[in-house]
Amino acid sequence: KTEREEMKNDRCYYGTDPSEYDAFGLVTPHHEVFQECIASLLCTGVEAVSQPRILEIGCGTGITTKKVREAVPGASIVAVDKDSAILKIAKRRVCDTHVTYVCQDASTYLHAMKAQSLDAIYSAYCIHNLQPQERLTLFAGIRHALKLGGVYVNGDKIAQNDILFHWKDLREGIDRFQAFAGTKFAHLQSMWTQHYLDDEAIRLTEAEHTMLLYAADCNSVRRHYRWGLDAVVRAIRKS
Image (cartoon, rainbow, N blue to C red; front, side, top):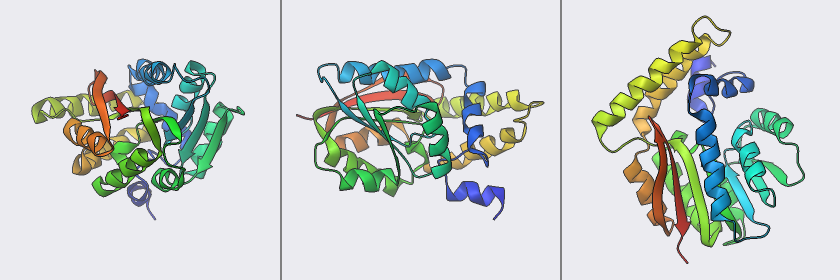
């Protein structure tokens, strides 16, 4: 298969070398604040629970896992990703007895869990990669596994509902990839540009994301952060 065909088959993955996934932070000025926002919202969401059980959907190379582990030190975290190569990097980044790594499709894992067994579920830069039907299945799993009163946090590419604002955000996001020119990651400029353009066919909008949360019996849906295409949203499972 060509490099392009491999990317189409696994939309949660940005390059041919798993270590290149981390290069995204080099062209994302808000990357650190974005990750800290996810961790902070989780921390306040489970502060009343002494030893919260938390699941991460699509942990990737463990960047967000590390932030959450530091923000919620008493938590037990299950980090799920279907890419075994990426999980190896995550395990090196966060080698901790409080973090369990699972190589599996997150929807399958959630549906197989005991009902209402998680205090929190979070994700970063994963759900926008899923097809619309896959999102429905995933959020049904979230509804099944999240406790009443449990917290959901998602930091992701979530398009603004106003298409003109979204196109502006998209253009600015693609333009930032020019920073790769002349570096060892120069090949990622065209690859990630195409990835962003491919995302448009299954664009995850604020309206769809909110509707998915309502379908998962969540309320108190609130966007806490936005920088261009990227937003962080928190919601609470109805109790």
